[in-house]
Image (cartoon, rainbow, N blue to C red; front, side, top):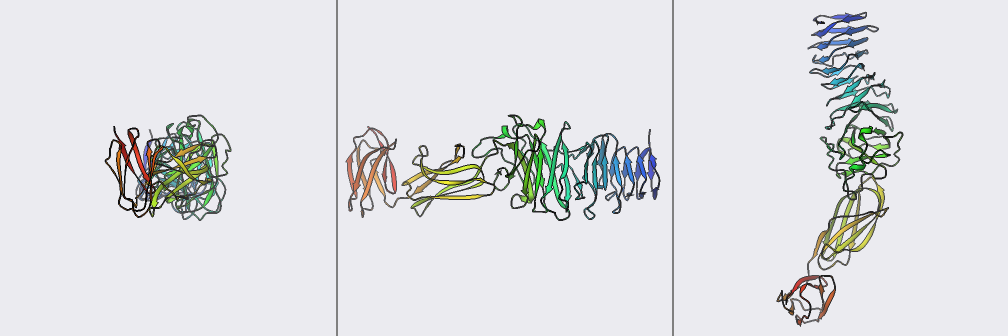
Length: 508
């Protein structure tokens, strides 16, 4: 059984060295020279003050535990650490800078954050040599901006946490090549991801990526400190989850406002409920609380992949430049979203209707409709839509001749294919400049109509519940009262004048 090698002194590995032990270091510097292989066939336990000055290769078969109080490697180290055992944990009280990390032989699980390279030096590499790097609620950062810094040799990165805290971070810079990360799901299916900067970025522009699968109804919805997805629906679709891939992606550029091309993917297990098909990626808009229409120009390089060109990242679009992505069928994208619709009386003379869309997809036009009773509506006017839009658009429409008293306004939205949707009705009330009294009310047909202001002529109409005019009168100038006998059927009626109305009940 391997023993424990306790090192309390300065150690130099100048040749190939094998330790069939637990390699435990305290308050020492372990120097591994260029061309030297240090092979540890047990665990590496770095206690307070331990440090690798590694310019060779350190092979570790057991666990890696860094509680040294530092990054475990010197700033001048150029060597590699190879974790070649079976299942291995990366743990400890401190974050390890492996500088150049190669994993092989089995799953490697983060129990603490780790990275390859340092921001100040813009170096470090990760070689996924047939093994899986399990992020396990932690982050792994590669500080080398070269697109070749992550090597895919049949391995992968495993994120898969619904809290989106299992994050792979890559410091971007001058290299505008495709930065490719092979993610995988729980069964090992590869989920290709890549980001190609649209131009050179400042050094250490940190690209953060995470992904996880959902249930067929797309729950649990993504939620981070900055963003919370509320639904998979919109004005025109009650629930689009059946057409949406069962996987979400997070991309984050917290210290930049740049553009680039994304490649997102999903596994067969993530296919939407209705089956596999060409998809388009859509981004959640936190402020609007809705899904942005697909950015134009998207393509599908392979089945279950979508490439999104010229993706803008900025705080203006989403807080902290965090962007949550869903993928929906090209024929049934997540729908156009209406932010708000409102209608108000202006100067007691006309109705002003206002609304705004966070995004539009195949939107043809809007129709403003009004009603006396919030049941039977009539069109008032049309307003052309934008068709397709990825930005907030604001609209307004004035009704110059509103009904007196209380009316109800709603908005009808019509797509290019003829599909329509409606908002909820909003009441708008116009107060009358003339005070009318009807008595008795209810009555048996003998009615007195009285007004307070008789300085002008006043037309009156009695309207039944179906909207049919059954009686008409006109009070002349100076005429303040009218008595009449109503030989009409019992029921509910409305007495209507130009800027008001009253309900009247006839009983027999």
